[in-house]
Image 1 (cartoon, rainbow, N blue to C red):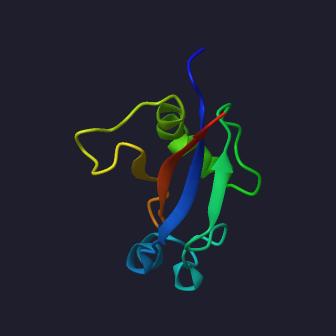
Image 2: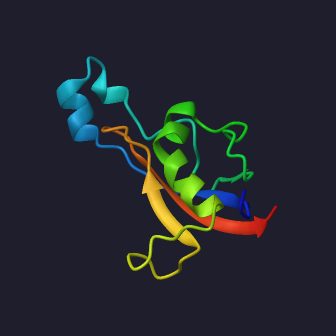
Length: 107
């Protein structure tokens, strides 16, 4: 097996589409941004890519493949300015969360 890297995951933005929540949810008026994460919150995934403690399992399922690529030395060039970073998000259609993935030190 090749080199494995840790992956730092930072919450860079939480959104809430209140207009859609009010239109489609039974109780959309009390709906807000994702309560699981906070902007700026950080997590570290080891090279074996177990879901970090305290990380939303649904969001982990959404970003896992990107974290896997970065943890194995892959890049998203030429689409990113820094080959060690990638931005991805969970797929909650009403309150998505955007994450910055950064390749860390080798394990």
